[in-house]
Length: 81
Image 1 (cartoon, rainbow, N blue to C red):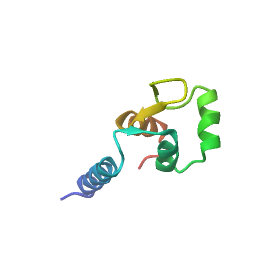
Image 2 (cartoon, one colour; image 1 turned 90 degrees about the vertical axis):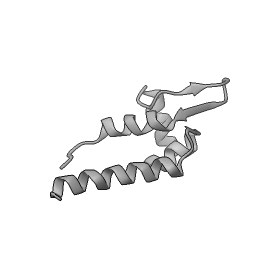
Image 3 (cartoon, helix red, strand yellow; image 1 turned 180 degrees about the vertical axis):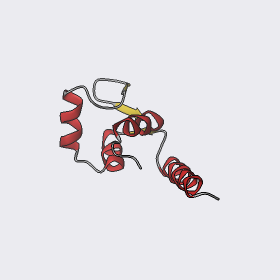
Image 4 (cartoon, rainbow, N blue to C red; image 1 turned 60 degrees about the vertical axis):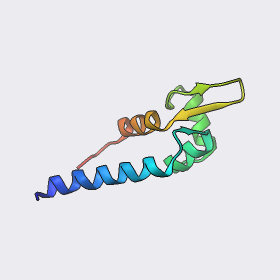
């Protein structure tokens, strides 16, 4: 198996492991833990309009779809090898 195929498999395995360990609907705190950022940083990004799409159940209850968060984070990647 070629090195590029192994890397693709490793990325896919990592993605599946993440999906197994995170709930489908994430709280802002869970999103921050997943992204390894502070809640303050997250809310600064949100104020600037640069966060994953949110699901609002009420003014104070917000959730983020895990797959949307992963796709949003993937768009932010730079310098991929």
